[in-house]
Image (cartoon, rainbow, N blue to C red; front, side, top):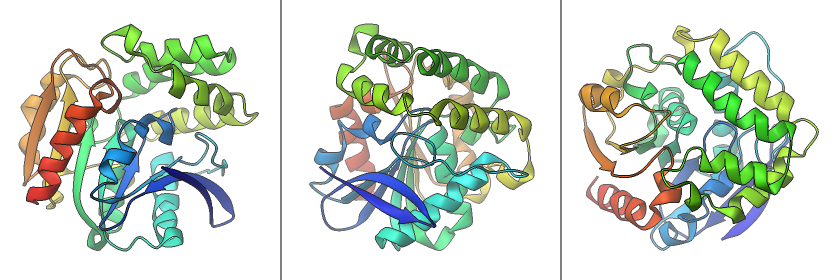
Length: 275
């Protein structure tokens, strides 16, 4: 797994990359970083050219402020420009949590370039609202901002532990990288601005997901005990996508890519190979 920085419209974007062949773009969640894919990048790079960028204002990427528009639109614009900067034309996507939302919006923005999608830990993509539930964002911000206001290795381990089914499975190596990222002077401001912006523009048609209008093959991966993405909403509504499959991980919370990486990779490989 290699790490590089790309210049994306004047912003430095850190990204991990490895492998050759068909591109696979991994999009992390709100307040996280590309490091949350650390268990999956090298194994998936055995079959794909894997790219995992830090979103704007996350990890070690620059923060570019926005105003007058939903933050999701701002983030996918830079994701699209990142694709251009590193030479990705057509690719598959895997998004986790907010990354699943951004995956759907990136498809809507660049439908010719997205071949299929793996959506992880998100009920938003099949919900009636079609944009993140404000209560879910507030709960995520309460967890994330606590670690950002009192940055330590322990606070970052606890933050990840709060979204793991087994708290002791919280990955200390990934938490250590988050400790450095959270200590950057603009991280809390960026995190707060994005979260408050998502709440402000909840239900805005510019960033509303209509699963029925997304024709590419979709795999939905969920944890049975996900505190951020209720499994009942997913099970009731996932067939809104016209071409969809679903895998549910038992004794799993919000991030199966961290809690069950081998099973996650197997499910992803099976899906990608068949579509």
